[in-house]
Every structure is written in structure tokens, then in C-alpha cells.
Amino acid sequence: MRIEQGNWIEQIAHQPIWVQVAVYTLTVLTIGRLDHLLGSDIVLSLFYLIPIAWAAWCSPQPVALYTTLLSFLVIFLVAEYSSGFVYTETISSLWRSVTELGFFLVTSTLITKLRKTQDRLRWLSSMDELTHAINVRVFTEKLAQKIERSRRYARPFAIAYLDLDNFKQVNDQGGHLEGDRILKLVSQVVRDSIRKTDLLARLGGDEFALLLPETDLSAAKTAISRIQTQLAITMQAEQSPITVSIGVVVCTQPPSSQTMLIHYADQLMYQVKHRGKNAAQFAMYPDANAPRHNSE
Image (cartoon, rainbow, N blue to C red; front, side, top):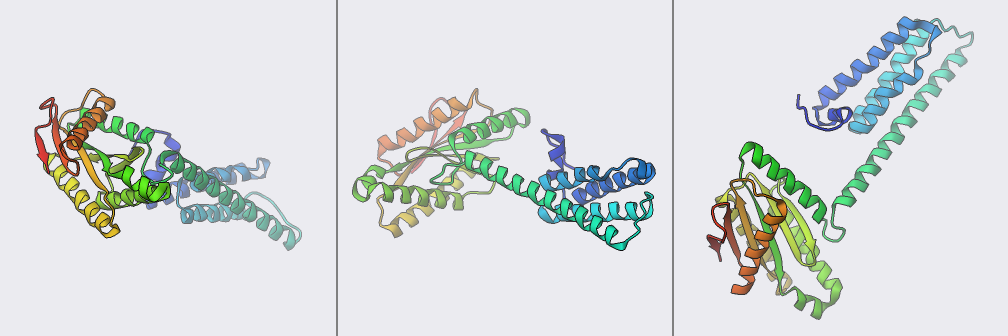
């Protein structure tokens, strides 16, 4: 079972489905057992909302539905056979059961919708609205986490600073709508060319950044080459003058700060610009203060 830092209540969301089902089942049965032992003197109906709300907030909808139906079944059995309730009319028992089931289902549904809304708002707050790359704030947070992880586990990673060449020409000739379309297209091509563990961020304007975990110099060159190739193919098909200048820093030791690292990659990118654009330049950190490897 994987344990992570954070709110312990929400840690169940990171566990396998069978673990989630087992935990919710145990919780419901525990409440049912207490309900049975306390009898009709103390009504625990509302306590069944604890596992229902927990599952609706933290788990997939089928698991939440299972927990809701299990809670209803347990409370029904306790009420009918253990707590001492006696219904003189069948309709009374039926009405109470239908009311409780409806209440449980509505509660579960509302909490699930609330969670999805919160997830959507969190996603929107972390993304660049135009390109659907992550924004600068999230990128710096993720980079800081990666630096800390590198400090603890001594694992290599790389960042890349990408700047589109000839983007002003596209804006001047095609207008801002065409510029926006190209930005979205570039973002899509890059995201399709990287691993799921890699992160693409839009830093602003026509500038992007990449965070490549578990990446040494050889892997970084392979990843950047793949991006260059796919962008070249796409822009040729679009008959667009867009190319990309890239500065890449591969870290074998943690840098002093994420700001310094981004600035270093930015410097490498500008060296490519000054040499004629449409290339990538690589440097190791902390092996040198200037780029030692370059790829045209």
C-alpha cells in the first residue's frame, strides 16, 4: 500500500480499487455493528454518510455507488431485524427504506459533482487557457519538487527552454488568430512527442519550457530530436515558417534554485538564436558554467 504525504483522508484515492472497496466495506460494517449493538436508543443513520461521503469524494463513481448501496443494505437490515423497530404497516417500512436510499444516493451524487467541479477548477487554474500546457506557477512548483527529489535521491533530470522562431512574422501576416492557432498546434505536437511523465509549460508569448524527469544527456538529446522532427513535419505541412530554438540543461546534481536553472536554459536558447535559430544547445549542470554540448 502506497503512503504519500498530504491529507490522510484523501490518501485512499491513491490506493488500488480493491483496497478502496475493502476500506469502505469495513467502515460501513463497523458502523452497522455499532448500530446493532446500540439498538433503537441511539439512531446512527447519519453516521452512514461518513463512508458514503468519503467514497464519493475520493473514489471513482462505481465505488461510490457500491458504498452507497452497501450502506443502505446494512442500515435496512439493522433497522428491520436488530434495532427493535416494529412497523405496523408494510408501507411504513417501504417508505422509510425508499427515503433513506434516495437521501443516500442524492448525497453521494452531489458530493461527486462537487468533487468533479473542484477538480475542473484546479485543472483550469494550473493550465494555460490557450495551449493547455501547464502555466508558469505550476511549472516552477513542479521544478522545485523535482530539484528536491534530485537532492534526496540523486536522480538526473533536464529542463528545456523553447522559443518559436519567426512567430512575429506569422502574427504580422496572419493576425493574432493565426498566431493563437500556431501556439495551440505547437503545444499539441510537443505534448504528443513527450512521455506522460514529462511536463510542458507555456511561459508566456511564444516561449515554452519542458521538464524531463529521469533524463540524462543521451535521453535529453533523443527527446529534443523527436520534438524537432515532429515540429518540422507539422510546420512543413502547414506551410508555416515556424521553427524552434531550444536550450537544454541536464542536471546530475540539484541546482541552487529553479530560477537559476530556468535562466541558464534561457541563456542557452538565446545562444541558438544568435547562431541562426532552429537548433538545440545542451549543457550539463554543474559540470560547466557554459554549454559543452550542442546539437544542430
